[in-house]
Length: 369
Image (cartoon, rainbow, N blue to C red; front, top):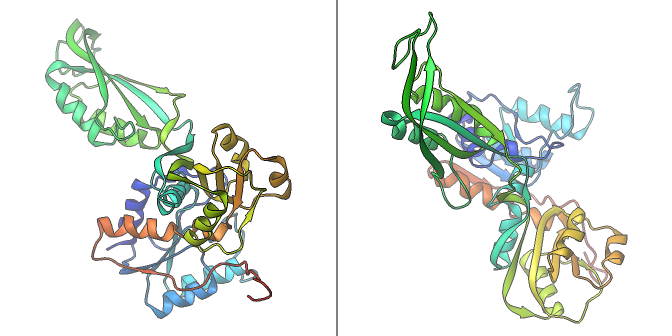
């Protein structure tokens, strides 16, 4: 299949609009019209990963962390990023990344952490904001179902686990066509009254153009009237981090052992134990230090993330068990998420997990590596 078929599918499930403003997710290297037959999935793109893709004849590398994170003004091989980019281009290897959009995705990195820990009643910790719009349009009665269904099929009307969500109320619309008009009903130059339904629904902002096109294409009027309103509602389905509960409370010591075993994190850093059992647990893959105070306000017993600062451990002051499990360790399951998404749609497409050890941090245990 063509590369754009694969990337467009991933983009449709894990929208690039969900990424943070500083991020650079999406297709970074490669011709969208190129044919691809197999993918190598990895956390990071390194020279060794490129070599692994070459050896296994993989046409595309799909990573969590973007290869190109900040702007590039020249490609001369002057740094590691440029060297990797040159090698990928020379060997016709495309590179695609799903980073903070995968972090914010409903079934993303933090949700996978919660799944690995067997947490129950899992919810998004900090929902996405400013991503929702309200659409209001006016449809003649005879065309209502056709237009409504076109709007829904384009992606509108999704609220949490429900779809095709909308509201309609009957009313009477009026219009008068000008000399150059070609009205569907009524006569130009004369005011016309038509039985209509005012239809309202919700949509993700990144789907706006697609949904409005579906509305206009399906609407019988020469000029379809509609309004779009920004919503302040939180998008509770997607966002940063997750919070849930263990089936049974466990001691802090036992919970640390569970975390270490689950994430193969053998260099755990953690705050002072409080002498209390752990039941309610918050998680955030990658760097989640900025959420510590919010997690405490959620009455969580423990919080697992990475790159926690020295003073953060001091500042919690017995309010929570703070656990730094490592950036690599908390995000390495991103490859499983990407693989599951791909094979669900393209079961015959060859997908390979990278076997390259990518953790740049090494640990010394009792004098041994």
